[in-house]
Amino acid sequence: MTIHKLKPLSMCDTNSYIVGSSQNNAVLIDAPADSDYILETIKTYNLTLKKILLTHGHFDHVGAVADLVDKINCEVYIHMNDLGKLTNDEFLLTNLFHAKGVRKFADAKPLIDGDIIKQDELEFKVIHTPGHTSGSVCYAVENNLFTGDTLFYRSMGRTDMPDGDDIQMLKSLRKLSNIEENYIVYPGHMKNSTLEDEKKYNPCITTLANRGF
Image (cartoon, rainbow, N blue to C red; front, side):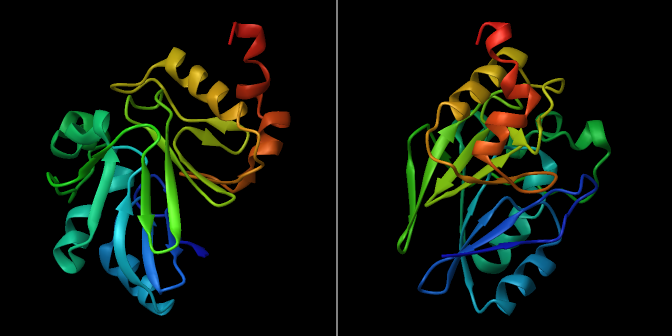
């Protein structure tokens, strides 16, 4: 397995990641913008895009999905609670952020907590982590955890936008903090970390006990 971090994309400087299999197939974690750049980068690693796994349904994570599917005809997955966001400007946040050129997409496959998405030898486990949105998820594969806008370096995702929820976010952070494995954390914004370090130093996690979680 190989992991390649793309340059930050969209007006929100969103992270996305190419995960390559032993058979030179690629799974893309989030598709923020600029489908041409994404495909050219995948090509430079001699990979073929097969699947897009979305951590949630905001425009800065899904903006290139429709264009990528038009060009490659790959499969797209998102949690069932965020499925409707892909065709709804309010929940995509395109209106709130005045985002231009974001196409709606209606053909994603719905996920639930615990699902396993397979690509060759790779198995991506879906961990439902609502809070930023009701359908936010993390994806665990081998010793890697793609956390979208749930867990950041020493921080967490916003909960003050449509479909956000403070209590659900705290419960999701507790869920992640209860994982025993020390995953490498690949977030939707900011730099990488490890789950062990976030348990120790992330104030959003270390204060959970004081808040009854």
